[in-house]
Length: 558
Image 1 (cartoon, rainbow, N blue to C red):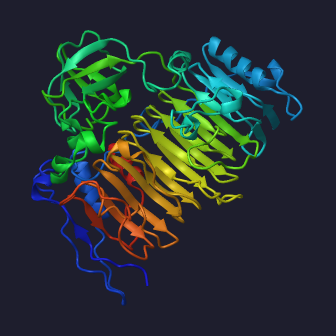
Image 2: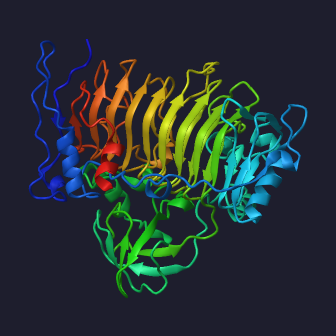
Image 3: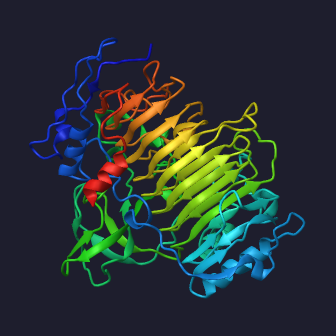
């Protein structure tokens, strides 16, 4: 018999302070009967109404309404400027067409942008394809008709990328098609890929005053260097007292008892082992309007408080790439036996790194270590994408302060070659203080909801069917699995396994709505914070009337 728990709410009264006075959180409902026709009250619409009353400030529900390319817009379609065959690419496996593809992309970039068409056929590439220019689209003829066959992993075709532990960084980043600014690539190479991975930030544009999560109008020191439409980076110091980290984890009681320097040294300033990427919180956000000499309005609500003890500023976005698209093709890696965990040589797919407002549409990745990767990205949309072939390590990875990306319509197929001994498949990865990310309308024959430590927060997985056979990962030095406001909404588990899906026992200030098919309770994940997690669980075993949290929020947002 399916698990039919009592509907519950773990929320202290103080947690509702950010909501309008009339919008108390729904009360716990009666137990669901095991037989008969009576059903519990459907409260998903009531929860959505609460969110709409104060977008960005609900204590449990993330604001995901701005996820995706330019806040949810349709990607632009530039004019066609060339075909890869014009540069010598040949659709056969006897000719290495990598140089021709890279020349075509360079040509489009140096023309100011445009689409490069890849006619039908299978093209051999012996090295990566670098997307270094903005406004360039690589457009195939359909993922069944245009196949890019990569013969070598990154370790052989580009360069080795080993940590001192001999784990390969290609296990979780890098792509056979890699969207990255040339300056970012050069810096990584100069650092031997052992230091920074993110934005190459520019000047400080303005200091920012105190503000509360959910605000959009901010007081700044000066607006003379800010303009409507600018994408800037809101940077907040992460002091050694771990106040920012406690706040991002929801400020529940257990966050005060957590030993941050010992249990989360990679996140914590002064620990001696902090990753350079985490010395500040970095959130790219667009300026919607300049309201005067000291006031600006953001295009979306603040994701966290700004406090005097955590100085914040707007920084210029340094060298980057934007408005790059990859469409209607398959990235096929030559089949190789999958290695043990984290020794992967980089038979990867499509990676976006330190870029914004890009997309992929109708793209399939086969025989991969990493399928689709987000490393410090903002507002990237993937639509109708597939991971297939032999077993993968990460089908999707979202890491290193990536924000507001959207995966809309996706599939992880059943692997044609199963995982070997000593290997792991994760599934939908979230890690590294990443926020605003959405997976929706998905089918997963393999994998799980992999929240991979380093405390991602304010993310959602919604309207997904999965077998749930993957494993959660992450370095123990990266600290908590979950920050606040993770939403699992209308999820259908076909195997009955609640692992990493049922959030009630592990995720602070998070929400589970309409998870169906569980045979038992509990996440089976280690609990980071003791005490009341102040989270909410609603309508387990029942399909909610609001079936897609992202679509519902977008309808209210628009």
